[in-house]
Length: 434
View 1 (cartoon, one colour):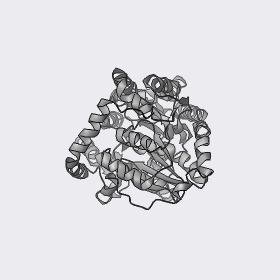
View 2: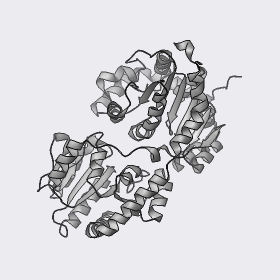
View 3: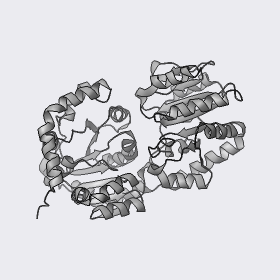
View 4: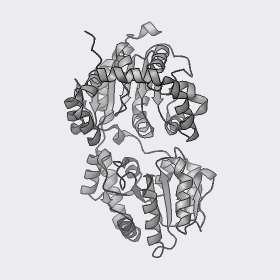
């Protein structure tokens, strides 16, 4: 018997239908802010940029950069099975990363806006045989229409923040009908698994966090050589994936430190690269000399703050920053991913707001692989201690590296859970599309 769509979601669908005429205006506003790619706007309306490949097609949807990075090894393994793969994402930065990092032959498209008409057009063209949605990007029309077409839906690396869980638990009748459409929910940890189960997911399996199995981000050897030459042995402090409000704290910490460490160079890689010029202005307003990597500049001996406002260069960034403050943690965002810098040998600092990676930070802090700081003063104090004590810094970096390496294994567990679905496709269950 077909599952009945609740009134809430029927109203949601109606609002999208009635409000569709204002979508072009919303696109225009987002383009002005750099949040849409003008040349690829048709994809947001469900209009394809490529022909559908023949044979079974696996579709993975990853909302943004973090979600995309964590499933690249999974995409590589599926592609190795000689299956066609379509990847969708919703942000310009994720599209740019996809162009750099996705395996050859994988198709990338912007995800359609969740309008019933656009979603219908998208699904009618691509006709995926299996849909893997990453983490927690749950769009109602996308899920319900996929289920109506009989496409198996699997949530991969599923996660629910405490805030989202509390919100959905107040109105379980709105989230349960979506989760019940999933054939399988693969959760990052036991807490996420319990949350999905309480909210109505019928089949939940804990497979671990795929982010632990992502290789360290690459660094172009020539660019790395040139950057190291430009830094020329100066002491370096890094701040990665910063959010508004945190750059001020990092710059304030630099100003506190520069009297004791005169040649200090601070590298800042904002979570959203378009904020680069604003960060440079904050530094200059504080009497510091700042340059932007997006303008093709390297730091000189006189540079105080070097802003990494580029896409796909975090491997380069982490390779020259022995101490890294992880952003999204001094502000109430939930903390960004500490795994990549740990794999590349950085000692880690973070603020108190790390609920997005609570288990990881708990393990890192417990074994001195990371240290929590509360403000610019503590950031300066802890960075100074590590800049002055190479042995202590190296111990922290080694602890962080060993912890994140020891937490791997999610990729194999995820593939085991997906094996029955992938085997069906390999045996020709999707041959009617060929």
